[in-house]
Amino acid sequence: MFLWGVATSAYQVEGAPENDWTEWERLGKLKEREVRCGPASGHRERWRQDLQLLPTIGANAYRYSLEWSRLEPRPGEFDPAALEREAERAGFLRALGVEPVVTLLHYTHPAWFWKAGGWENRESVVWFRRFAELVGAALPGVRMWVTVNEPITFILGGYLGGLIPPGKSSFASAAKALEHLLRAQTEAALALAARPSGARCGIAHNMLDFAPDRPDSALDRKLVQAGEALYNLALVEATATGRMRWSFPGEGIVEFAIPDLPGAVAFLGVNYYSRVHLRFRGMPGAVGEFFYRDRAARGLTDTGWEVHPQGFDRVLRSAARAGLPILVTENGIATTDDRLRRSFLHEHCLILSGRIAAGALIEGYFHWSLLDNFEWLEGFRPRFGLFEVDYATFARRRRPSADLFAALGRRFTASGVSSPGASSSGVAGR
Ligand code: FCB
Image (cartoon, rainbow, N blue to C red):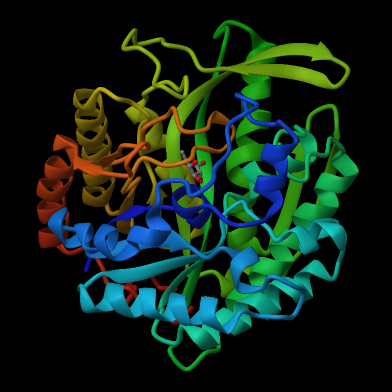
């Protein structure tokens, strides 16, 4: 069955007592310095009610993440109550007829992980596999996993841009961290796949559509090729070949092989939101700049992003180069004008059905997000939810786009594309 669902991440809807982001907030690193995630959307108290919304929007699947800092508060020490709670959550979803799709790592890390050197420490591979093994054993009924959310975006933001934890700006650190992160996700995926339930694992890869800021500039066009390779294609190709070649213009190149990677990954998750325009600058440390342009004059979203459905078509074609089934693991818009959300949803679903009709093996679609939530550096201002959250009372209010989502879901699930674990792409069994 085609997976039709919504996505959230743990920290963004329920916060955490103490992790790298709580510290990042204390350091005043969000756009508005005084903002704290706190209980986020209040989902921790209200998780049952919130999950009961899923059948009302026709969702047969739900993508959510585990908060590593809650499950393993100290290295090697797992909290049995937290594990039990996750088992209860997965069981609750099942009872609702909703397939759990569980992300192991969605941006947040326990504080101890960074104290011990984070992803630059080769031991991180062992720590992450241990985490995967433990939660895999605690959640035997979970068949679909996302190992890591947006590895490339995370490395760029955390190790080159200094924007998110661990806040570094060093290509050498980024290169090391990327290698360990991809090795770790491969080992985690193999550990999960070896479980008797035969889990299927994928990576959620953020993909952007790229365009030259000045179409007549050869330098801008060259930068677009480099950006496309670095941001979109390097990971897609690594999942196909087991070889990673990651080159950042003006910074360096890193190459490594993970022969087990192609066999460990059963699907490629695609997170698509927008298009960016690249402009060559050629300054040391600043080869280029990127912009969200409003080329179609339809207004940028509340995160300042361009709405560009045609880019969705392009990235889905690029993602197919992995030779794996695709799962759209995120797609959505930050807006308080729900009419814009409805047209966004409509237009992106048209692209999706066009790709499916053309024969692309797409197994599902997850809209970001079920609820309004904590949008990282942007705080609570961007509203991505099919359900609005009143942050003063935590009341939920259904937006009309939730009805459209349900109606579209009836079409996608009726046409039946493929079912988890029963892939017909020639990569069955991975
Ligand atoms: C993605 C992130 C997700 C959310 C959306 C808007 O890049 O994976 O957590 O913040 O953007």
